[in-house]
Length: 413
Ligand SMILES: Nc1nc2c(ncn2[C@@H]2O[C@H](COP(=O)(O)OP(=O)(O)O)[C@@H](O)[C@H]2O)c(=O)[nH]1
Ligand SMILES: [Mg+2]
Image (cartoon, rainbow, N blue to C red; front, side, top):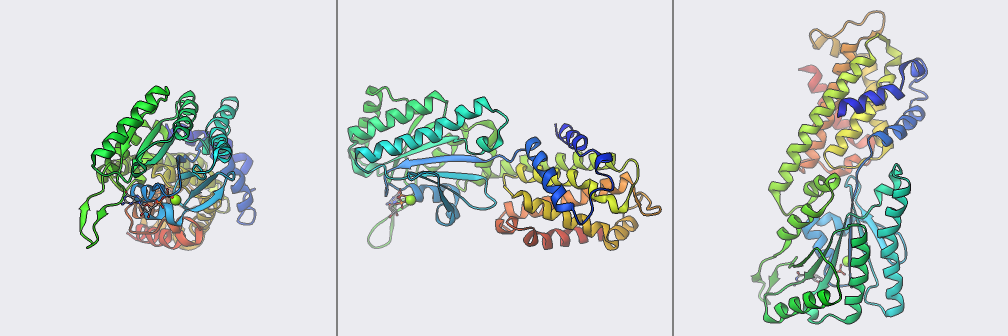
């Protein structure tokens, strides 16, 4: 599968067109254009979770509990409409769509509902007409968590109506919807509450995938003693994982902080995929260099490198801006072309092609790509396992020192 991808990239980047035309000077421009095309071949996936419910029910607390503290507290918000805020943190492909104002009077509530409907339905409708439009895909809601505070102890008719209209919309596009009863206590009163909701939703013909009691924060008594542990989070993670579309399941598995086994399984899969990507890229690079290319033209390896970096990033469930990828590739190729690494690489890797009259061989192109891919993979795995901060994915200058360090040790081995 990755072989196809790189073959396509090799085709569009076609050597003869690029040879002699990409230089260090016009590299950024050319590479941005390539990256655009690569985006169409290797789209960056994002996972969109919509969280709805009245203010104070515990939405932020729940998000923190499931996705780690950074998610709800440091996420930067961008108002989509007056009623919906979308936020994410750099390097994290999960976007949270937070609705507000559900507690307001009837009129404002209608606005919120309209907004949610538009967000859920409009993008999908548009996407059906333009299936290739990646921007639309990026904003496709994948799951809806609707939160009701179980301590409110009664559900108003307006909220049932609201849920009915939401679930109708969700069902029409097969969007999974989980009703979460937050701040749950094991009391008879809550049991009754649960049953009341179940019955009323049923009476209203409201189809919800699941109703789940959750306590996202442990219960502490006045003396600071824990009297009830957190609960329901594991179930929420398991069910959400099951209900999410295949393409974004692994992002969720990688980013949730509740089920470590699930996270590690996602890691293993990502590692395997990255290995395959690196091998395919390296083979593609060998093909690029099959006819030895002049040294100064090493930049024609850029499409392959950009695609490789993009694909590896996706595999681990991170997101990275195009500009950062271009910056990384530019710097690494420039370093490689600069005497140091190239000379070193050729000397140090036995059997790797000979540099005749400043030409780069396929073997060199391939081994350079392999080293770059491996170095990037190592850095990403450190981020994945919390040894490095995901912040270094925000700027090429932040990640480059790590990459260069690893490349140096790899090449000096
Ligand atoms: N005891 C308890 N308090 C909770 C729980 N979840 C949230 N809270 C509290 O409820 C308040 C509102 O929570 P928040 O997450 O900000 O609600 P949001 O407005 O829906 O985002 C905060 O003071 C939380 O500490 C829970 O499971 N148990
Ligand atoms: Mg909140």
